[in-house]
Structure formats: structure tokens, C-alpha cells
Length: 156
Image (tube, rainbow, N blue to C red; front, side, top):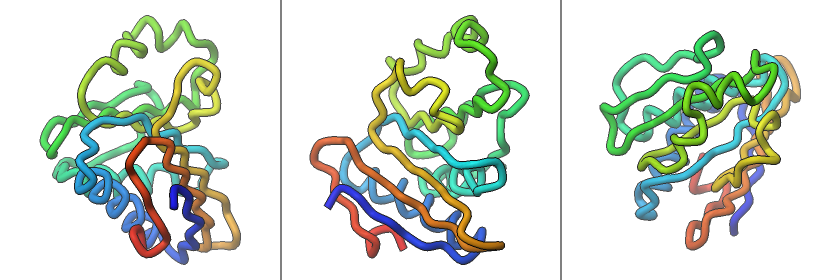
């Protein structure tokens, strides 16, 4: 199966799902990919990103790069590039930072607010997080990478 819909009941569970996805991709010999992360403000995108980084073995505190667009981490099993495009007004802003050059590098690129670049980049994984209550979230994860399969039990 290449799709999974998972219900999270807490930030801890959302973070764990992100961590398990990263570990599953590494265990599947996937060392590179582009993850689109979508959801409304406060849905848990950064929480998921923190878990994903943890699953890659990154020990630094992962914060949302809202004001700088990108943070780079090299302490894990593979490099991790965390983009947050919430404040992006036009593509020139990130093009000047070398945004498109990151896609030639090894490692994982996770893009929060990916809908802003959806017409320009092919993702390996699409993750949509929807609020379903105060602490409840529904995570829809679609793997577009060849040879990698997931299911709810893989990630939960």
C-alpha cells in the first residue's frame, strides 16, 4: 500500500508518526526525497517535521524556519533541509536563496506550506494534516516514491 490515513490524538503521536516515516524510508534504502507537508495553521506540521528529523537521527532542536525559509541539519543519517514557506510572497524570494539547487543534493527536503510550490516540484511523499478536534489530527500520507510501501501499522 502506498497510502495511509492515520489518526493522531496528541502532539506526541504526530511526532512519533513523523519519526516512524523517516525510519521506514531509511530502512527502505531511501536516502533522498522531497516531502510536501500541508495543513492549516496549527495543524501540527512542525511537530511532524520534528519527529521526521528525530527519525533521521538529528539531535539538534528542530524549529520552524518561518522567518528564514530554511534550516539545514547535517547531524543525522542523511542531510535534512526543512523549508517553511508560510511567509513566501513569490517564488523569487526563495529562488534567490538557491531553493531549486537543494533538489540536486542528497538528503530529505521537507516543505511546510508546499502548496505554494506544488506546480514547480515533484514530491516523493505528500502529507496532509487536518484538524479533527482539539488534539485530534488526521494524517493522510501518500508515498509517490517507487519501491516504498507503507500502511498504518508501519507508521503508528
